Length: 102
Picture 1 (cartoon, rainbow, N blue to C red):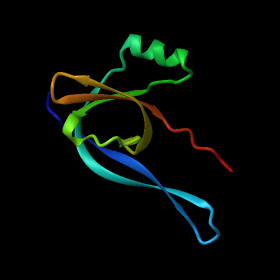
Picture 2: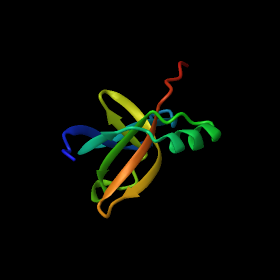
Picture 3: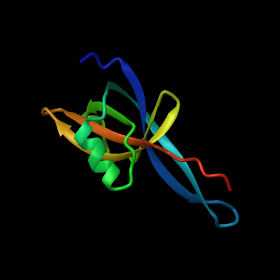
């Protein structure tokens, strides 16, 4: 594997504004990754739960700190599931975030 792709692991942080309303923001860190295809079995299991897996990336396990989101190619994805592969790598199965207007 080449580790030639760049993604950003993101943690969501909720703070209160001046009116005590919750505001969400993200902190991120850059990681190198490999783009992989979503496996057929993984796709059907997620569909049964009402999710649509759209992205699978492989990262080094030591770089993952229970982040909830990943940004890849300018798109923010929510991490549905992590799966250890080999001894030092981790696959992240992700779905695109739905932007709600309102």
